[in-house]
Amino acid sequence: SDFLENANARLKESSRAWEEADTVIITLGTAFVWKHQPEGRIVSNCLKRPGYEFTHELLGLQEVKDLLNAIISAAPEKEFILTVSPIRHLGDGAHSNQVSKSTLLLAEESVLDHGRVRYFPAYEIVMDELRDYRFFAEDLVHPSPTAVGCIWEKFVEAAVCPADRALMGFRQIRSGTTEVKDSGFRFHNCMIPFDQLKENEKRKDRASLCHIPLFMALD
Image (cartoon, rainbow, N blue to C red; front, side, top):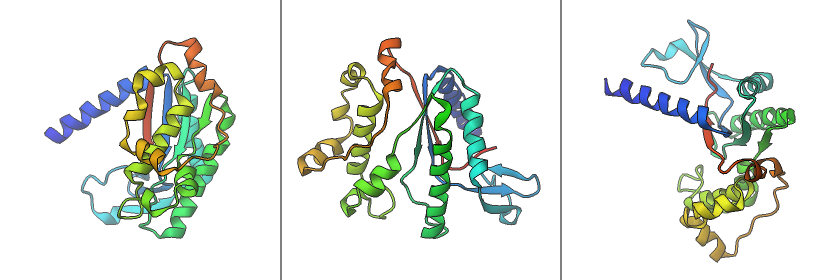
């Protein structure tokens, strides 16, 4: 079927991106998962199975740490940038969302001692720096294009060397960048030591990036 062909094509594309990447960006979205009870497995899709076969569960801190450590340890040749998605998952309520995000933040903090792992504060930028309504979409959950532009510019400044930055023309990539500057908004210092990533400029002509949005933990 077309669905299966498209799914397999995306899987091959993702696998190729992973193999070629020098630096991998992992974004965790929620610590809540769906578990298929007959098999005891965490799944990403119900595959049209009856709803009663699944339970909604919150992963513990150690489980998320184990997931991250497994990914990082499996690729000793790669560097990693960890983030937490600023998009709130409010289906289980605001408190449950905070518990989930806190679990992810603590898990990511615990694996930074690998030496080749860095943290980019996308979640903190939106929650602390961009608290005004104009930085959110109409649903008040998703970041607005202006907020996305802010995060993108900050990320590029932190993780991409100046030579590659010029080639990217990153100031024109997001229209929100100009809008933010015109409004007089400025970021506070994020205190993120991305020196190791910037060393790519000395070691390689180009750094290849791969982004893994883990909005649900997979087995």
